[in-house]
Structure formats: C-alpha cells, structure tokens
Image 1 (cartoon, rainbow, N blue to C red):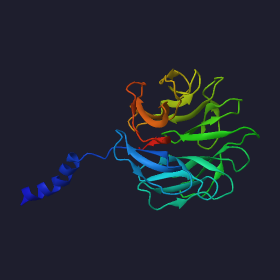
Image 2 (tube, rainbow, N blue to C red; image 1 turned 120 degrees about the horizontal axis):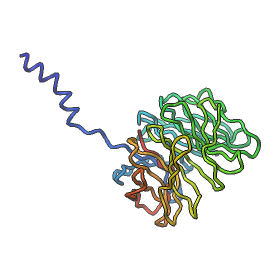
Image 3 (tube, rainbow, N blue to C red; image 1 turned 45 degrees about the horizontal axis):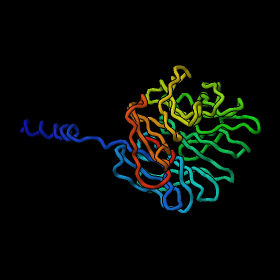
Amino acid sequence: MMRFKSLLILLPLISFIGCKAPPPKIVFAAHVQGNWDIYTINADGSDLVRLTYHLAADGAPSWSPDGKRIVFASNRDGNDEIYVMNKDGSNLLNLTNNEANDFAPDWSPNGEKIVFMSDRDGNWEIYVMDADGSNQRRLTKTSTGVNDFFPAWSPDGKRIAFTSNRNGNDEIWVMNSDGKNPLNLTNSETPEICAKWSPDGKKMVFASRRGESLEIYIMDSDGGNLRQLTDSLGLDSYPDWSPDGKRIVFVSNRDGNRHIYIMDADGKNVVRVTNETTMNYFPAWSR
C-alpha cells in the first residue's frame, strides 16, 4: 500500500519530466491580401496561425511576460489604439481610446504595466499605463518637432529604452521607468532605431543605417562595445531576442519581400522563417 502511494506521488513528477514545454512563439504583423493582421509562428517556420481578422491594420504586437496575452496596435476605430487579446486571439479588449494615435506597446516584466508611444500631445512621446488601460500618463516631455518612439522595457523593469531625435538625429536613449534621467547611448550621424534588451539586460540589439544599408547592430546596455551583426544588400530591422538570448529574430527584404529571419546572437546562421509572398513586420519572441 505504501509503495502504491509513493508511486501516485511520483507520477505527476514523472509526467512533468517526460513532457517538453511548448516552443516559444514569435508573434508578428503580416500584410496578406491587402490587410495587416497579427500572426504567430514557431521559430522553425511551422504552425503559422492567424489571430486577428479585421479590415483595419493590426500591428506592433508584444507578448505578456507569462505568454498568455498579446498587446498590439490597431486602427480599427479610425486611429491607432492599443488593444490586448489572449494568445489565441480571443477576448479582445480596447485599452486606449482617444483621437490621437497610440502605437508600439511593450509589457513590463512584472506584467503590471504597458509602455507605448502616442502623439496625443502633438508629437510622439512615451507613455505608460496599467495593464488594464488605467492610469495613463506621459513619461517624456519634449519640445515641438521632437519625437520619442519605440519604447522597450529592461528585464529588471527599472529602465526603458527608446528612440529619440531630440539631438537632431534618431538615436537610442534610455531612461528610468518613471521617465527620469534620460541618457543618450548612441552618437551617430545616421538613424538608429528599435532597441531591444537582451534577456539578461547586458546588451541591446537595434537597427542602424551606419553603412550603406539598414543593418542589425548589438552593443552593451551602456552603449559600449558596438558590433555589426548583419551585412546584406537589403534592409534589416525590427530585431528581438529569443528567451534564452542565444538568437535574434528580425525583418529583412534581402529576398525581395519583407520576411522574418532568425540568426545566432553573433550574426551567424541566418535562416528565413516565413515563406509566404507577403510583407512581415514587428516580430516579437514570447518569453
């Protein structure tokens, strides 16, 4: 009897050990048959799933930390607003509602807040709100003609990276999560956009036109040790890290259409993930 009870106790553990966790998904926006919608796909290109079905443009998706929900932007109400849905596309909720445009949302590591860009005050600024859409407030306050956009939360939740032209050129900046202490990390005469933190917070990947084309670069999170990862005739942009920090997903038109690609974190072993004759943007890896 005791031996039977011991087996019952061990069975859940045995089942857990024997089962593999589902692979992390990549969510992205795809332009199919004249319309932008949200899709997910495995890193090996399998299991492509369409999540949204709307005549409006849906884009810039981001995963919740627990991988159960996706926040994204959509102009289904006439202007870009922030929406959230379950990972299967169900239970759609509108989080922002104003006459301006809200775009590029990113979830805080603890799942409690969402940072995004908005032009509700005349130029693009960085805003933050609770994950249910409440307590919306502005984090950056710049002058007319200056734009802050594409925010990304650090893994420890203490800082936010973003792109800004406050020095006359699009550069990578970082600030505290309350908007204080903004710091310019890059200093280049060419545009640099869309920075994303590595899972350990030690590095950032971003897109830059330092050379003849828009390419993917990596640097330490303090702006040091800059390295170029891609070198193609096309435009490479919108990078994001795999959950283990070993690979980077990005968009490139090196094969004609804008497809989703994956490479090792050192720029090697580039593989194309999507094959449809569509345009793809804003890939984000689930955590």
